[in-house]
Length: 407
Image (cartoon, rainbow, N blue to C red; front, side):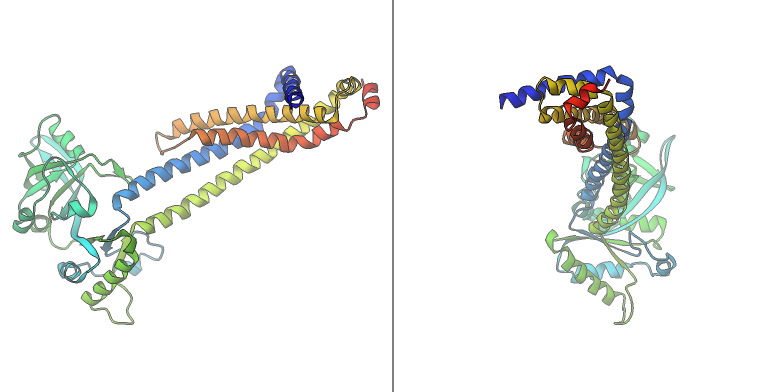
């Protein structure tokens, strides 16, 4: 065992000396490995970051939360198939609330975009949501300061509002907004609460929003708006059963016959995850294929360089064999040399991927883990060993007498 370890250390020392003696050639030989490792690691880093970000955003929807809406979240057919669907009505919401047995909470929801102003400050493009007190339970949104819309606010259609952190900062700065009145689309609303910071969700800031009672929103901004019904399951594991129940209730309340298709959509978290998986799997596969091709090309380049090295060092190999070096020792030396070249390329590729991930992180979320970096380097070393087998075997099979004659 000690002999094998000593032979490996000695082979590594000789291999490292051979690489440093031909720095330019060694650097060029690693180029394909650098590109391949960088491409694969960077692609996995981007996809991992997107996975983490997407999973976090999906968690806000909740695995047991269902949205009954006019349109599906993912439209794969012609949009004109859906555009003539009738809007969901208050009666639809009331029937779902009356008959649904598998839901813990059922919430009405309408939205639009409106400017919000306070004195001389104004903020455009604010997401205005009309709902009731149950919105807290179906979305897990909580106020950081003040309170949320109460049941009495919703029943009396009071002009009160709960604002997001972006609205609070832009309009009030460091001042307490509770009790102040903001003007939303020309109507005054008293602020009763400020929501916790939520960040962005699918590119939409969740902090640039204002929540008001649904009756007040209809009173000031019209009733002809698409109503959504948010349903939270009692048991998140029984979402499919709840979807079937809701489909039956909606078909009855919208008076659809046995042969008629649904004129509403049941949306939930799983649909977005399926779409996301389809998109990212293609991108991921393309990146792996491109990186794999680069690694193969780099491996072939390593093999060619090693064959040239064996030819140039035939006399050296002959001397070593004449002095008693075994075939296994010669084989080990050239395999280590090939693996070292690829390992250096792997380290450089991982470094470049890390730098690229830092730059990309400004626009897209990325996530590079230590196991991924280690795996990238080990895989590069494996490529070196794999493509170095043929040149190493050729060197090990050389006849020492023939090799000694070679000058």
